[in-house]
Length: 359
Image (cartoon, rainbow, N blue to C red; front, side):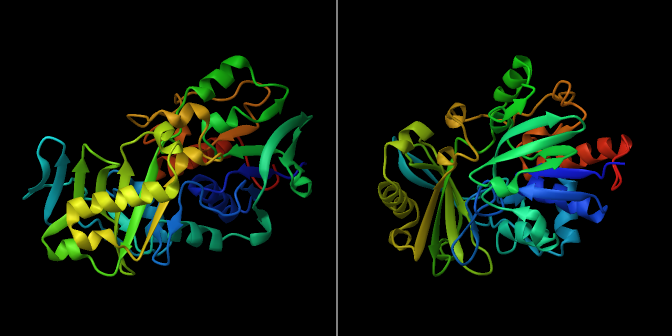
């Protein structure tokens, strides 16, 4: 019998969780990540690990995330939201609103969400984790698939199953032989990549001076460049972070130094002169990340959009390829919870079909 060998494409949360689940079951895998780092849309900044990607999870309705951080013994804490919020509008300027409830009854991983990446990857055999490996083509050869990678021919190999922990629009760009039907490609391209149109800014300070002033760190602006700001502090440092109100096309025409300067000026307007001089600040534009976004993703998405629950690639790929990225989740597509749910769904279906180490 042919030994089951699964290639996981994508080293973000979904890919790492898939590898973690397969490894515990004794099923052979190799994980390939196009970047020079693991984590995908999870990215840390600075020595304190401030998040430039996803930060929050909600245990009440995201049980997989709660179970995973518990199983990995990762300390968590509740998002800071005590105090007043700041509102900014061209008509009235800056206004302090007492008793504002941000709704952020959410949890964060101590030291940043990248701790989740480190914990999962630390439980996996390093020889099966491959960086700088960008999948370009998949050729079907009988019962097996030949994978081809850009600039890393040493990673090329033959596998019985392929798990794609990638945004659907990136999957549409892979060269399949036989080709994917146009209907499949169209379905994949129609699903926006959550966070791909966004950028995030983080400013690190020596102390949370806004808390001392009775502020939560929450701010909402109709002026920008940031339209939503929150406290990003953890036990290693104080910080504020914000999401941008200017879109990807507008950001592309401005230098990073100009963007940072505009963010610092805005934080000074909202929180006072102490906000003008952070110890360090960081900016990351996900729309400019070729391993996250496509040209289609430059338009912001208003809500989480996922593939239809029953979608699978057409024959002859249906029995060989699983979509396990967050956007493939039946529920909570785009969230970290969605990444875990998509993997669990694929694993359950594969085990039902007889997947095992002797495949």
